[in-house]
Amino acid sequence: MHEHIATPHFPTIVWAFTYRDMQIEVTTTYHHGQQIYSAWVTYTTGSAVAVPRADSPDKAIAGAKQWIRTHFDWSDVTAP
Image (cartoon, rainbow, N blue to C red; front, side, top):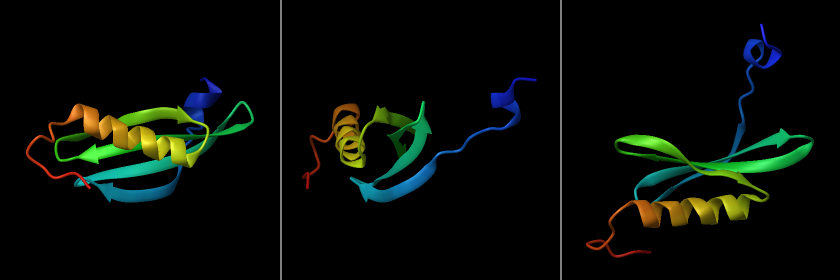
């Protein structure tokens, strides 16, 4: 059996908050010795990896917010 299958790795959630009624979770892990961040977005009908890789939590958050703004219709909502 392959080592990566036998010992799964789960990233650590370092920041989670609600933005426009959706949950953003920023995770961190190490890839080839470098710390990287990802952002997951959970919404009413599912979830997605909005930002698969960023070099800072700020960039992951900004990317997740942008992902939400571009993937959902906000024409009838007042944005914060």
